Amino acid sequence: MGGSAVVVGGGIGGLTAAIGLRLVGWEVTVVERARTLDDAGAGISLHANGLRALDALGVGAAVRAAARPQYTGGTRTPDGRLLARMDGAALERELGTPIMGIPRAALHRLLREALPAESLAVGAEVTSVDRSDASRVRVTAGDARLDADLVVAADGIGSRLRSQLFPDHPGPAYSGSTVLRGITDSPVDPGSDFELTWGPGAEFGHIAFADGRAEWHAVLNAPAGVRHPDPLAELHRRFGGWHDPIPALLAATRPDAVLHHDVNELLVPLPSYAVGRVALLGDAAHAMTPNLGQGACQALEDAVTLAAALSTGPTVEAALGRYDAERRPRSQSVARAARQAGRMGQRLSRPAAVALRDAALRLAPSRVTVRTILRHADWTPPRLG
Image (cartoon, rainbow, N blue to C red; front, top):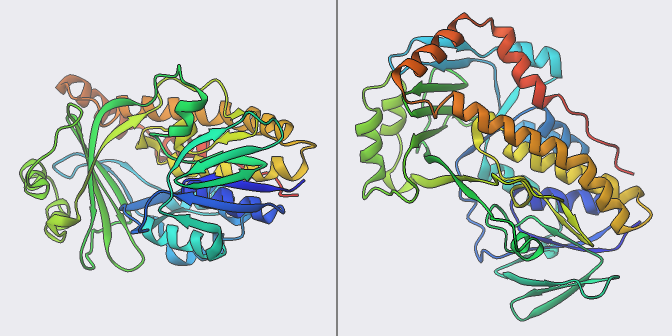
């Protein structure tokens, strides 16, 4: 089965959905509302499931070549005491690959390069989807009207299309945490490939990149909407007394390179990822907290599963029913696990609870951490075609 598809959103999920659909014979137009693709964002860790999805889409080798494997690191207290060691080699033995760290901008560029330039329409915001004709879907983007056999809503956590399809759904909810992040302006030596540090109601982490720079993020319990006149100065105040290399990472970052976003999630799960000839994908379908590093990986799984379903389904509606049945239980389970991980990790603020968590981490053997990652990362993509 083939046809024409409009993918709404040019992020990781939308681009990979387009790549997958093209691989199974569909004509695809990706509509992205941003007029300039500045690839905003910091860094991303790709687990084995995400990398396997990229392999299935034919872009895994290029992504690996631009990424840095995460073999060393772990979880620490603010004074630098090790709570748990990350065993990247053990993950590689179990899954065939370690976790890989890559700048989001580099990943976006590689995904766009796998698509024809003419398939990407930028500066066009989709305002409505008309499903009155059961055999076609009409997408309105500015002054343009696009008729398609399939629409993929990959328009992010604030998805306008999700709101149209499920008007009674409450939409995204604030998780209670806000995140500031950035990438160092020049190469640094953070001492490990990946690390998290947990304090009361706060987390600081880093990802080392192949070019020598590093991404860092700081997560804080805070009311929604709180912003700082000088975010970097606030981070120096809040984390300046934490262990090395945290002060050095902040010092190597330009003040104008700091991004600040509240962490929102779909607390109320959607009842379906498909309505007629429209499929929801990525954050539009299952936005989750970042505590397991699985948000992008789940979008990559979505993309491959959607393409596989549409390559063999007798009708679009039947294929989307299969996609929903395969993706909704797994992705919503991962979202629940991510929420729980946050509650037991960065979100803890009471001293007694923090001390109990830290003691449990110190006593747990490293294989427990490996098993936790395996629970979500050991996924095999379906065959395309």
